[in-house]
Length: 141
Image 1 (tube, rainbow, N blue to C red):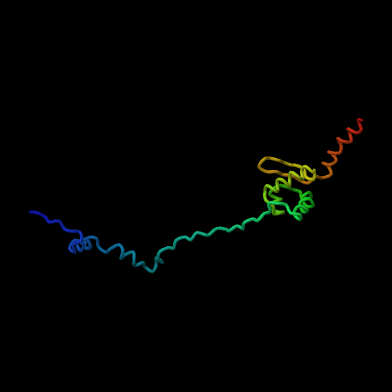
Image 2: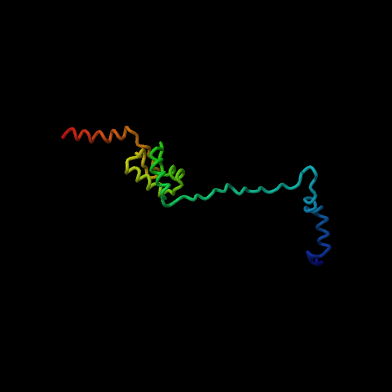
């Protein structure tokens, strides 16, 4: 008694499989009921916020230099980020400007940590302290 192998592509084999498995799964998935509402949509990712490119000056022109010398000594807080924001200059130029103003004595350091420089305007109190030692040396002579 030899059994002949049944080819998978034969019609008798596929009809036997359909009878055993019952209705195909595709038929069930293709007919959603009215209460289910259908397939959920995929989440759409937002594009994110688009930030405008800063067009800051890399060289001080005449108007910016005048504004630097006139207005910056009146600021209560002077830092590179403040100068970049208000004068529209780049960071390295802001640091150089702060060094120049500090050398002139119109601003005084509050904190000069490597990561963040914080300066403030020079008030009359600091100027009197600077002038007082000079007077004492003149009185001693």
